[in-house]
Length: 250
Image 1 (cartoon, rainbow, N blue to C red):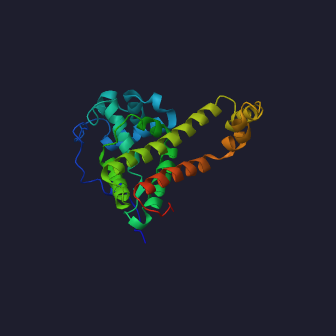
Image 2: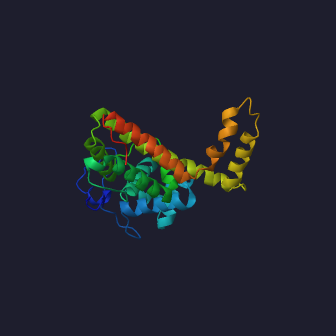
Image 3: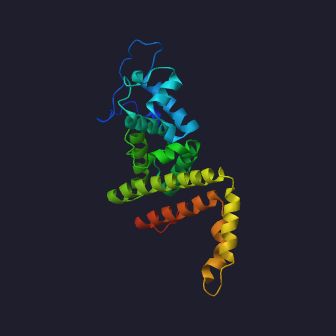
């Protein structure tokens, strides 16, 4: 039986700080004590409540009731703040110890857990594109993910590519859901938009579009969870076959 997964933050204390991130420094005297953790938490609140586009050093300072200049004691700039915020979220992700007998199911567990986490911070999913997750918590998470992939028999290069592929699939799924949610705010529900598309495709001339008319229903009827699980089965099934194992994914 697997041991209980440990959140990344529980294993990240000994990870050295990357050279492009600023180590925490002792706070200067000011109206209220600040820390890097407090700055990052405030940034996460701005991103979650107001949106990624509203994240500025001034907005974070207002949340903390300090001047913007006070933040630079703890973070160099906005880009570093984004990386620290992403790593803060990664601290909540739990990954089990690698089990070669369950590696395909463990990949799915990682994907589902990551999707659930990023769904609580959808702006962070968007923010993660183009970012290299290299903070202490991210280092722990990806080390564990690679350990699961290699334990399953994937060679090194394939495991490296697979880690990126699985993470990208999850982020894309969450980001797409966010796009649909934002479209819903414009006054037309997601269900109405899908029904309109299904009706349009189903009404096309069948002799010219036999596949679209036949599959208009299945293309739009599946729930986001069903679509996610289908893609996960395809992805993990492909990885399993790369190991030369005949056993299908769990």
